[in-house]
Amino acid sequence: MSTRETAVAGQFYPSDPNEIKAMFEHYNQILDEHLKDETILQLKPRAVIVPHAGYVYSAFTANVAMRLLNNTHAKRVVVIGPSHRVYLQGTSISEYDTYESPFGALPIDKGLVAELKEKFALDFMPDAHHEHSTEVQVPFIKTYDEDASIVEMVYGDEDPSRLAKIIDYLLDDPDTVVVISTDLSHYYDINKANKLDSICLDAVKNLSPAELHEGCEACGKIGVEAMLITAKNKGLEPILLDYRTSADASGDKSQVVGYMSAAFVRR
Image (cartoon, rainbow, N blue to C red; front, top):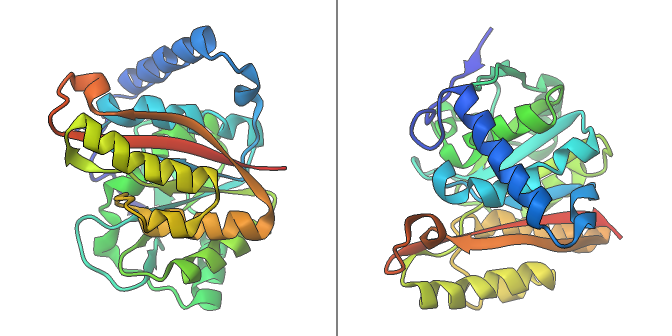
């Protein structure tokens, strides 16, 4: 049996499950105490956008969205993220049998993998799957939808409209949810970052792929654009959940990275 082993445990997130659990519990305590709109926590998203930096910087923002998976009881979660380590054309889909996490292994939905490979001519490029943009989401999935299977997709030079067709197909199944992974602007001062990131946030809020190309510098912009195309096609409503930068954790406002989370729900 082949396993997609962890590549960034102990780097981007703790390798100790007790440390991760304590982080999530802390974030949820903050949400429960301070979230003004409690209906947010009852949302049942068909898809979410989440960041993928080190947990100390971005996991609070990701947790706001990933916690909602608990409401969906989805049978499978498809995680889609950009490749940072290797160049690839198109999209690679993981063909491993299981996906390792500090909380135990998740089964990979091999049937869905085979289906997607055949229908959309996807390849499996193992080197592309030592990827943090997808891996950092797995402890959230195992925590909030522990019985779900997973599918990991990593894209490089990809056409957003092609990726949108895959997401559209996935969301035809009510038992499937999609996780789109992206960070926002990188290493600008806080004012420039907020300005650039507001373009990304407005594009998501307005379901406007065109607005993404007016200055949004998200590293996963291809995945976000594909999600916006699909959301428009399927009549999904975008709900912005959280936005912050690395300065919220580090205090350094001179070179920040931006993070956002959003949910897409039935109107």
